[in-house]
Image (cartoon, rainbow over all chains, first blue to last red; front, top):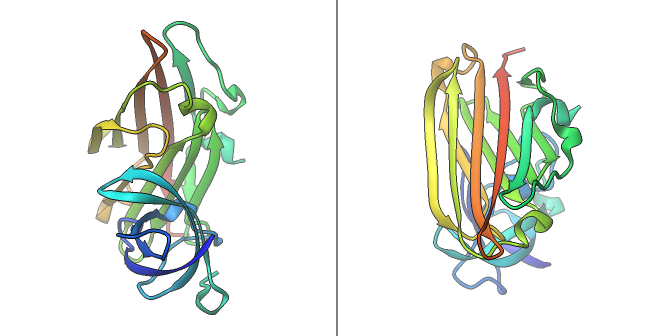
Length: 76
Length: 151
């Protein structure tokens, strides 16, 4: 797990890019791995806890496997 | 309750049928209903984890499916994937990826449903195949019928 920041999020398509020290170039993220009830989304600039794995996803080398919004940015 | 909406999700191999969690199969399951109070769906189904949600403010529909480790572990090559969304039986969206890594790739799709959002009986069908062993093929099918209501 690593502290990370949401670089961009497409709310209509349900995916975005998250930056952290452990994922140079960015980590691809899908709404399905966001830990929150109901409709799931993030906003650029949000602080999150990121769990990731190495992968090949839409031009990125890292894929998020769990995203937990930080309490101060929690939308749940 | 979640398993009701996944009408059919079967993992099969040419050499031998591999049935994973067939308890989720229900031949005549009622469609899942999205409402403003319940705009999301999440379920572990045969072969992986499926999610879908509606952004009511824009009519955007989103869905994703990722194979679980047990299903993708025997893969010996890349996966071919196609997904089709039907509105009242007629094709509304098609998505495909010819060569992705089945062990990590997240199948994802989205579409603006616009004025059809509440008028259609929707049905999403996902079909994935990848090689296993020397000459086998594993196939994963997911069928997700759903409707969208405003109340």
